[in-house]
Length: 285
Image 1 (spheres, one colour):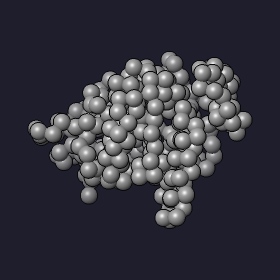
Image 2 (tube, helix red, strand yellow; image 1 turned 45 degrees about the vertical axis):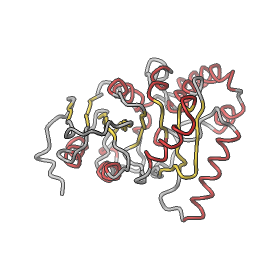
Image 3 (cartoon, one colour; image 1 turned 90 degrees about the vertical axis):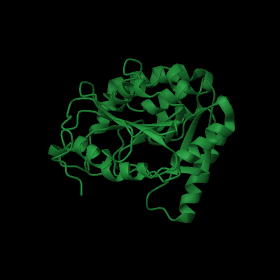
Image 4 (cartoon, rainbow, N blue to C red; image 1 turned 90 degrees about the horizontal axis):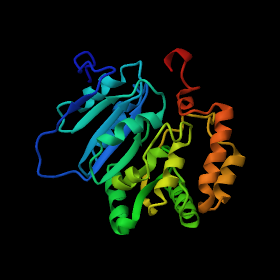
């Protein structure tokens, strides 16, 4: 049982807990942004604690009004996890939160994770194998998105479909931030997440385009995660915009994203729009 009353009171503040000294220097940082995720974040953090690779954890609270922060402390404090909880309450959206957290990443690899996604215990290990096998020219490892309720056959079909898309279109991203892992130096050299550069939804696709200018990505059916399927109403791109993304040559992708930015601006699709949660009562958002 997590006692949220005794957790550190750090709402709107940055807080850092050092793990006990160890001879193992983590190669990984997990970077996770969250906003009012009290219903899911404990389960996700418990899954991450079981990873077979050591890691540091950078959590960024994007202005939560529930007890998500206290729950994070409750599940992490005193359990040997080197973690920091940062606050980015001024600018809403995942892009701003990741931009706040990335300067705190000093490990070789970084995985951007969602607070409502299932991560198997070998998630970081599988990404590490992909990044190591490809050498320094492999700058990203993408996880296949598998539905949480998928049986073995359906899961394999989903993984093969996504890996096939990655093979056919290797300079496009086929999954969102929940399944993206990077060489940290490549993500930083590409400019990382930036509200000034891209304040709209689909920031994970835009940042991946910049990263892929520096190297290639790899996928494997053995590297997967299970994002939540709770959002039934899309607030992102249209079918036409998605098709345009796939058919636009990589050399013209900068122009594509300028075109997409104009369209998103007209529709008001800022990154904060992802806070609209039709599955929750209005007062809980």
